[in-house]
Amino acid sequence: RRNKCAFNSQFIQYPERKMKCILSLLLLLSCLAAVCVTSFIPRTTTTSSRRTQIPLHAAGMGMAVAPNTKRNKKNGKKSKSKSKTSTPFNANASLLRLEKKYDELSKQNARAIQDDVDSVVTSEYVIAARAVDTTFMADWVPVAQMCLARPLQDAETSDGIQDESVLAAVSYYCREIYEAATLGSPLLKSCSRNTLQYSVEPLDSFHKYVYETVVDDTNANKNEHEIMTKSQAKSVLKLKDDESDPAVIKKAYRTMSFELHPDRLVSESDDKVQSASQEYARVKLAYETLTSGVRTSASWYESLGGRARTDFRGPLTLLSLNDAKTFLSSQPELNSAVVGLDPEMVQTFVVRNQAAIR
Image (tube, rainbow, N blue to C red; front, side):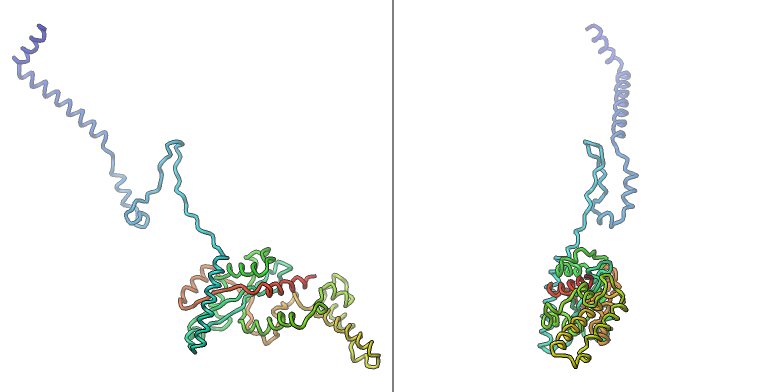
């Protein structure tokens, strides 16, 4: 107590010493405060310079799109942003949409014909496919039908079946055409889409030279006795089972047809002439069976109609999907669509391909 009173008395007696202590204490407190403040101030010079280098398209026009590099607190790994997966192309759904569009284009064409309006020309084509690396589809099989609607001035200056619009449309719709082929005959699913070749032909040419010859004639005029397999044909012509030489086949046909020709049996009885005529017809059918269908030198499908059939184009050298899309986009007034053919008709040509290799 005595010491405390002495200290207070000294403090009162010496005011200069009191001021020095106070100033020293204030100076110490200010230094401590300055150190604390500077330790908590972040360095922003480098980050600000980096942000100014981000382009606008990457910065989202000022919106924060910095990459997510935050570490997971549990395992310390960087969290990855989910990548956007593109939806796979649905050929079946696209084919359904194109079928509706095909109907709309057909109705517009019918109304234009009824109203005698020729500002738009609508052309229809039949598309056939084949897979040369297979035995059951080595010849052409019609699988789809395509429609092109374009202004009259564009149609007048086109090159017909050689027009680039036809090639671009087939190239662009190759996925839908393959889908139509598999719907027409499920057997075609065993063929890869990349191995198929395509041909195109105007609808009227196909109907005249192919449909009327094969489908109508097959359904109306032929019966089960007029259908012959390869093995049966070789047996009729008395050939070996593995015989495939065209010269040998032709020689056997000529020999038997000469022996059975009706002109050589004029003096024979009616029964013998009738029997020989039936046998002669079978020999002729056997030769047609062995020389038709899939050939080594030429396609049976392409040979239909002979030299008069000039509008058949195939196999096509397809454009890439991007090139075809670019070409069609450059012609905004061109409308196109595809639709599958009758499965019964498609199956008729598939069966003929199978019969040709028996």
